[in-house]
Amino acid sequence: MARALLASFAKRIDLPDLSLAPTEKLTPARLRIELLSGLTVALALVPEAVAFAFVAGVHPLVGLYAAFIVGLITALIGGRPGMISGATGALAVVMVALVAQHGVEYLFATVVLMGLFQIMAGVLQWGKFIRLVPHPVMLGFVNGLAIVIFLAQMSQFKVPGTMEATGHGMGGGEWLSGLRLYIMLGLVALTMAIIWLLPRLTKAIPAPLAGIAIVAAIVIGLGLDVPRVGDLASIEGGLPAFHIPMVPLTLETFEIILPYAVILAAIGLIESLLTLNLVGEMTGQRGGASQECIAQGAANTVTGFFGGMGGCAMIGQSMINVKSGGRTRVAGIAAALFLLSFILFAAPLIELIPLAALVGVMFMVVIGTFAWNSLKILAKVPLTDAFVIVLVTVVTVMEDLAVAVVVGVIVSALAYAWNNARRIHARTYSTPEGAKVYQIQGPLFFGSADGFAELFDAESDPSLVIVDFADSRVVDQSALQAIEAVAGKYEEAGKKIQLRHLSRDCHKLLTKAGHLMVDSDDDPDYALAVNYGVRTGIIGGH
Image (cartoon, rainbow, N blue to C red; front, side):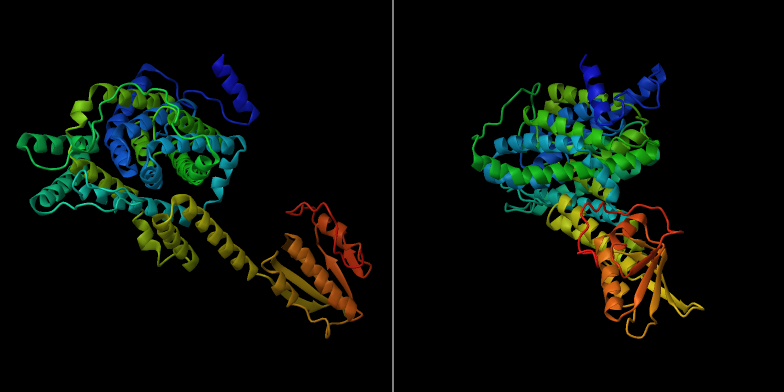
């Protein structure tokens, strides 16, 4: 019954069916692949969820519960089978300031509100706007994300108990020094080396898990004095319990959590939708953006009531799942359930993990996330694209991902408008009857309106001027205003102007002017980009 209601709701907002897999049949062989892929993802999720909890300044269980609940719900009703969601560093670096100033209960309330915003975005189908994100913005996005994750690891090089959480983990506290620091750096390097070398020897187990296991075995076996997970807090726990955030239900509380909720919702959806597109390219699937927004929102809303820090899609884990053969919802569901079993039964083992192993894993995530090819193409791509890549990267590090992507899209749009504005020009010739013809080339819109007006010389032109728009496109109200202004100049000079190849919408607005001659016999029948409901400011039509 519940599934029928959900399917009915999906149809009403034009969402795809919530099947286990859009193209794969769940045969025994497929089920085995999905379960193994889910196990691989779950094993790799443990250190990342714990590390991101450290970044946010919350108990490791808060990150693990978020990884379990968000991963499970998005696997069940998400927009793309094969995607993996959980606690992420992109959200953690925003949460840390809220936790440091107001406490973890305010974080839970923020996550609930964040989820409601994401559900609203899905119902309103705002996810489709992710297609407006240009490639240079995506490059800057992943580069900035990699740098943020790297900076967040710096706090792990401080003595446990002295660290202060900040946006990038660079707050106050006593840094490790002497032999402890050298051992820490050596173990980090060893973990990274194992993760790099192991896939060349075998792919039987995830390289990050092997790196953690080997480094942990060395630390435990030799009794090395280095910071461990257990030095920070115990991660032993049971099933997530329902918990209403203990915050005052006042306007002041709402004012505190609202900015964080908006930012977290935007970051979560942007990263999730970018991951959706990436997984879709690898699996040959399309659509699902609105459904993914609703799934992320539902997951975060539930997580906030069960003591989780919230989350979004994880690019790295999704790639692990897809490359391991995961194609259906079974892999994501299995990953979440395996992770829960780790929380319930393997906590004592996880507490022995040295922080150096987690840092090594995250450094490899940084290396894998950063788009190194973007450094090579900076000198080859147009200057504006190179500027956008650098700008989005810097804003991501200095502010947050949502602001960075919005800034990048705005700058890209302005650059596009400027390039198109420079394309406006005209070819001129005279007819046997003595009329002068202006053949306009290039789009006529707000950016090119001034350049269009400068093409004409009303004083020296003959008594009849023909403006041909066959190779142009009148886009907006600014373009119509520019045409009116040019016609007004010829009217003042006692001359007539004839417009050709305008759209039908332009005819309706311009033929009201008595001095305009509009030749509509061979005009194209395309619609104007803007729907004008009121006709005002037309020459001769006041």
